[in-house]
Image (tube, rainbow, N blue to C red; front, top):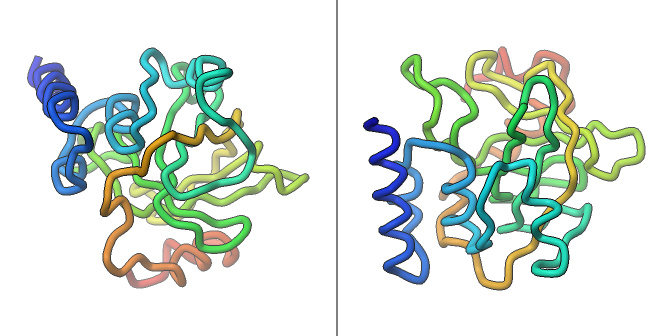
Length: 187
């Protein structure tokens, strides 16, 4: 019940203002969809995996990351409802950072927002169709490869402050390119 009330409060707050502040979004606890909608300005509702088809004809879509774009994870065995996240920073052509909600556990609970986590393109064609995501429990990239539909590009600017003041680009590159690097690197 508490989580539901928190989501409703976030939705009301973001509906009342053109763009929610990054500080309020980073304190959000709930599902990925309301977070991505508020952070990106992309006005799509429903399960995360439906965003790709819902965006057709309403928003530009593509297979290259841009800051503020929403990445749409396909529905899979591990993600039966898919997942959406907002690109917060481009590190290099195969490594970006995401800001998203409801991925890793924090204090034993899911739903919290995470800022500037590593996303690594592991697709054979370098087309962002398969990715690995940084996972708090392993303190590095998880071992699961997730299929991705693509990126949905909004019409407006994303919320200021999606990326932190001092994101760890080097840590993101270590996560991506050094086997086991994230588990041992000091952050």
